[in-house]
Picture 1 (cartoon, each protein chain N blue to C red):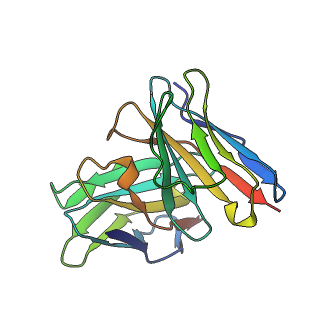
Picture 2: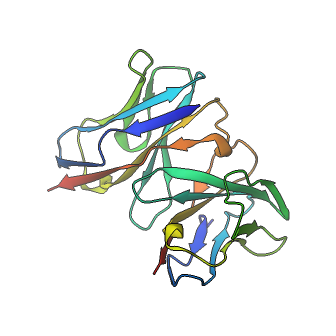
Length: 116
Length: 113
């Protein structure tokens, strides 16, 4: 069994300040972990993916996430927020590296607001 | 290459009516997945289809829900006799093959009055 918890449903930051979106997971396997972003009126887009290689994963648009097995966490960070980062972010876990779409477990999402 | 197209963007139905949600996958993609997102919850897998075949419908309610992906045309998710509990965002995703990168549509928000 697997589950994923996004600890904050809403996060607000000022433009130019760091972003931290928190995600904790549980899995009976060595999981693969993903972050997806959904901008208004757009489909979900893959930001980054962890599949048991390097624990620090770099994604698009300056985002990165660190896999911490001891803490069962996969938090998403960005050093400096941009207005265009305002969106909803989903943390996702899969029980296998191939990430079969049928086995993905999605978090409930974190809405990121960026203030000018 | 257009992305995954879902329509309508918003759909309002009264209890007992039928809802038809459409998904056109990316060009060249023959694998389609439907997910449902209930309020305050994450996306949940419903059904996986390839052209003219339902491969896995383990996440779909046994009654009132059906899906198809015909040889020509979009994939359709059909909900008969809708109830208030069907109100949710329905997302479609496509991929060129099994276990390959998913591309998502922007979803259909179904509201049942």
